[in-house]
Image (tube, rainbow, N blue to C red; front, side, top):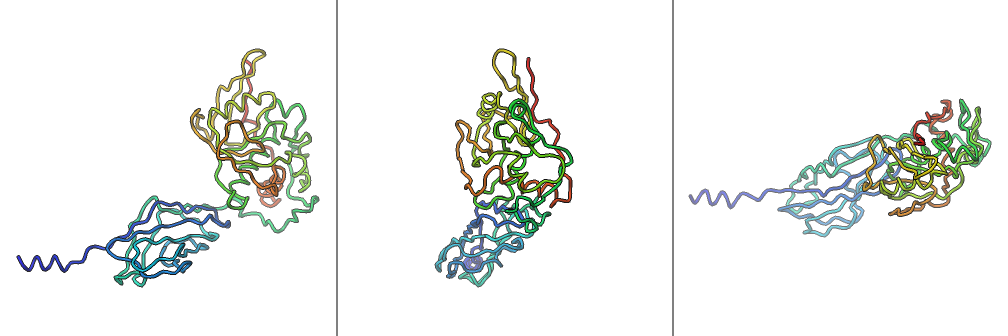
Length: 339
């Protein structure tokens, strides 16, 4: 009996460590927003760790291109440490962070493997803009050719306010791509869709043949200041109805049917985003050159980037650096009825 008691006394308590929920997200080739990884240990303490100390070796599955440093100094005897993960990833990565605290960082002198947390993870995806050589174009040269149009992407002062336009498709798709991929942090983010009123389109559009930086900048969409915001499904429907005489052009994520009778109320009879019916109470993230009534969490993009300046970059991306001919998207996003 005494031997058993002695044995219990001699057994040290188990060492353990946990990591808080965090998602380290980004796109290859672009700097990420610094993520904070917070680790808590049990039955041991940290030794002294100086601020900005290199802790890259702690995260054993850290994607190439990223660094990990002590976000703040850790005093000896502390049980919590915070790691800042930053840099420009060069490889995709997903899954839980794998972390091992080395023995040299702990008072007890024994390494601790942090318990895996499925909600502490990487979400690094491949860049959709990796193909074109952006430096091959002098973007200040309005005569620089960035692609070729197989057919004209036309617009007119009357048609753009009454129906879906190829230039409207191009402009709104360009805006989604730019906000999610090309714009700099901290404005880069995932959005659900983009839109512009028909009046926001230029009247001329793009002619078939070579496309220059100047054509793309001046002939597709106007130079509105860009906004990113949150909006409910009910607010989206209200916007579409209010703009029935200035037809709302939408990115490819959106399909809607609008009923415009000869007399009576305009109604939205169908509306989906990414194939899912839009519910009135669901909140969506969107971008446009204007802010709809009731929008929240509004972010204004600096005027160094205007709606029209997005277009050349998107065309160069979409044509693979000018190697693929640009063709209009199918005009299947807006259905107009008059029942």
